[in-house]
Image 1 (tube, rainbow, N blue to C red):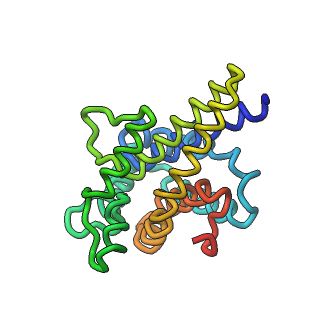
Image 2: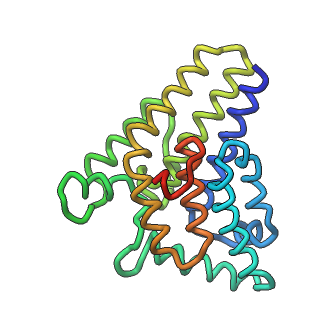
Length: 227
C-alpha cells in the first residue's frame, strides 16, 4: 500500500512539473531551469522509461543546459519565450498549437484545425464532472495541454490521499478516471502535438519536454516508435 501511495504522489508531482513547462516561461521558472532543479524533478522517471527513450529525452535536456551555460537569466528567458511563442502562441501561424480541439477538429474536417467548439466543451464537462475547474484568470482554454496535465495531476493527488485514508475503492475510481481521460482525450492528440514540436522546435528544451510528456502518458514510451 505504501508503494501505491508513493507512486500516486510521484505521478501528481511529475505531471504538475511537466505541465509547468508548457506555461509561459517566467523568471522563476527560468531560474529553476538554469540551476538544473527543474530537470532534477524528472530523475525518478528513468525506471519507468525504456533506457534508450529516457536517454534520448535527458540527452536533449543536457544539450540545452550546455547551450545556456553562463547566459544571464533574462537572456535565458528570451530564448525560451521566443521558442514558446513560435511553437504555441504566435504571432503568425502557430507551429504546434497545444490544444486538443485543434487536432481533433482537423481530423474531423480534413482541414486546418480550429480552437474550442464541441471538443473543448467535452473536456470542460469532464473536468466539471470530477470537481476540477480552471482559475478565473487563466490565459488558456480548458483543452490546453498544461491544463489537461494539471487535471491528471490533481486526480493523482486525490488518489494518493484516498489511499492514505484506506479508501481503496475511491482511489481505484480516480485512477480509472485518469486512465479513461488519457484514452479518450490525451492519447488522441498528444502524439500529433509531440511530432509537431519535434519538427518545429528551435530549442532542444521543448523537444525534450514534448517527448517526456508523451512518454509519461504512454507509460514510458518516449521513443520515435512510440509516436
